Length: 616
Image (cartoon, rainbow, N blue to C red; front, side, top):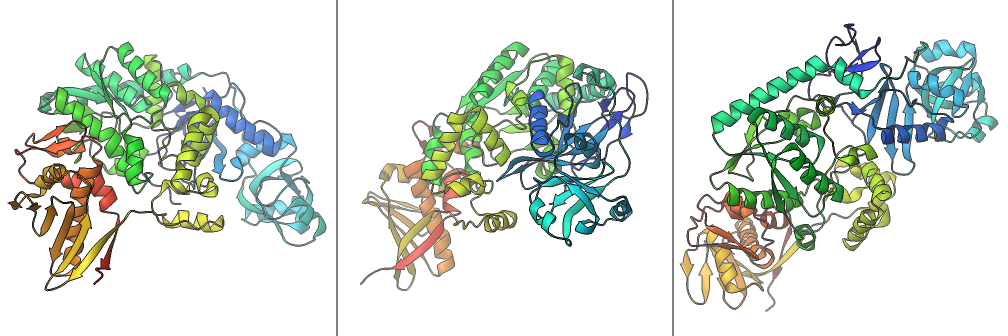
């Protein structure tokens, strides 16, 4: 997987103070920092005690000893991979990477610098003769004739340390089991990933994150000043009421603090999606009060669970959930409190994803027309955010200290499977709930454990993983069947169960051309009071387009979740929300609310359309 370049790699290391730097010189000793060769995008973050524990547990299991000492200051860098892949940086060196394997769990992939610390454990080693080392330095792998000794418990696919005279010189992966190596005289034993004959000394420990804050004081204060200036300028230009989209995560917490500093006051909008971690909602509400921000809470209630009944489980390529449980409730709160619109400061950063790297610093979300969005921390890395929060001395979400990389909905398909495995440990009741829900959606146990439920249609890489695991995954989508009658024109017929008045309400968005006691007509689509709907067209392609519009009206009338997304699209204040949306006579028939309705955009648009000839 290619590593995306999202911005400049900023990590350096003060070798004198043994501290990570985001600037060229250490503010404590004045020495220039050495660049650390990390993998893009380079969104480094502190390793908390739980992170260190997970790394050391993997090290002890594989190599018989710990990789990290308790007084080391460690940062992690999330790199591209099949699942979680975190580079481990300490003492100014990349000591390896922690990879999550669907079958084995966490696997430590040491670098040569990390292997030098692990070789004392006496496990996972392959000793080679001195005359082999020059060949390894040129890129060769370890062949059996050059092997002197090895750990008898090595299994094919294990990470191993190649040693020479007891000194770690390379790392790689075993290509056969130890017992096979013992019984053979030829063949490749270790595919070498990286060679290094240079030893890397451990630096003195005992440093704290308070020291890291002092070492980066100037750069953090510089970023803070720029963000505060940006907030004031945008607020003055927009002249709209200001809110902060506050999720309870580190980025939105930093943004809330910055807005409070810049404007002297802040309003935090918290969205309770109904599937947030309970700790996150509690923390968000407590933090807003502690900072002195006014608190607004948008609650989605049970809309996610109701939505699953109609849409099926969401996916990375099928994100109806964000619209229903986040944007909809947000739109309703904005309409209630800021009918003329608002300016929302959002903790979005370019280092999070390619999409966010391409985003402007000020933008409008097409799903929230009345909200102008701006990101004060667009150019910050995660380490900038953490050092700022530590400088401010504020409490942050306790879930980070439990090893969580990101915070959001606990069943989000955007999660990595390592995070789902962590959910099993930290919130077993939620893990069981997710497992049961996916089983009801038709996902087997193997599909669940390999994370194949996270897509509606698997991308190529996931298809390859599924085949490798011997799994065959069905494409899941809704299917609508229409009776087809052939005459001078094609006519498709279906039935609906919604009240005729609800059908008429939602059809208004498309522009009702004819209305009578028995039916209403919308450009070749008729809805009859007796529950029959028909669409007429001269060719099959046009008929398909019309039946999707017809089905969209039916789905909205029958299954409206009152999520509020349509409210954000309407410029004429023509939509009322109670148990479901109602489109009033003020409607201009622009169709914006229809096209953006999640039922239309996700369920109907992605459904399979089937025509069955009418029986004579």
